[in-house]
Amino acid sequence: MVEINSRKAAIVGCGFVGSASAFALMQSGLFSELVLIDYDKEKAEGEALDISHGLPFAKQMNIYAGTYDDISDASIVIVTAGAGQKPGETRLDLVKKNVAIFKSIIPEIANHNKNGIILVVANPVDILTYTAAKLSGFPSNRVFGSGTVLDSARLKYLLGEHLGIDSRSVHAFIIGEHGDSELAAWSSANVSGIPLSRFCEMRGFYDHESSMQRIAEDVKNSAYEIIQKKKATYYGIAMSVKRICEAVVRDEKSILPVSSMQTGKYGINGIALSMPAIVGKNGVEGLVPIELNDAEINALTTSARKLKEVIDESVML
Image 1: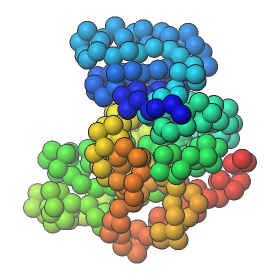
Image 2: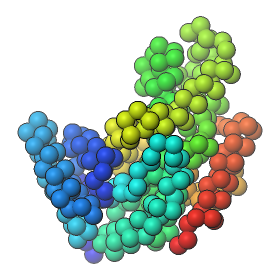
Image 3: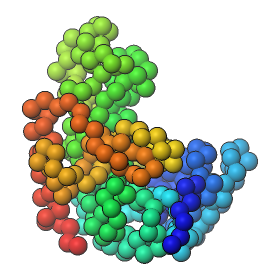
Image 4: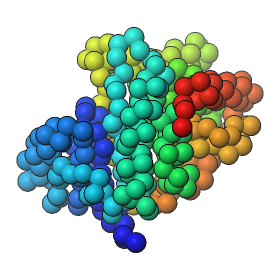
């Protein structure tokens, strides 16, 4: 059995998201070895070379283009490969194209790496996390997606801007699908332990309902706006990948809203979506039961039902 190297990662897919993630990981100092894999090997070689030229300004690291033979001891395999989201296209529109791509990628990963973690980043991330879990045969804790980690960061950023405070003091989650049916868990949102509505009033904001609706819509539409303006999103998700890898490599037990297989809470079972989870060296080590009101629970189960319908209609494994 190949021993896992906790300081080695692999990225499958060297498009905008994969290469930006590689760049973020190079700067992080988390890994001493990073292998890049792409169907276009020259693209992977070019990205590895370009990023490696920044190493004199960072920490010592070996970054190179490789094949699946090079991932056997990688602690984390980050899958960004897939068709990109085009202007006017929803994440769910990508399902059939990217499930087909995953049918060629995931078995290769599972055949070459038996004990690492698969981190799914390609969209639609919830459907592809489910697909990866089924195709790999890995324990569910070792297959999870970036989920709504970025959406939650967008929520914190917008709330920080709205309130004129450091976004790192905002504690709030987007949950459910990473996509159009996602929802903000306002019931559990707070600023340094102070309930959000009370903190808003401390800052002179009283029109809570309209502000919450506006901010939640802005979060949901952020990707569409960015794609419309610059054709793709990649920096924010690259930072999200770095954050998730930090939690795993350092065994932080951090609570992050990653996409993982659900096991019955709120009647949601057998699909992947985002709920706050404890993330450490073993992957998803448990879900965190945050407070939700009846309307939020209803929205969450609706989101789950929409994902289940897509899986039933489009994912043939």
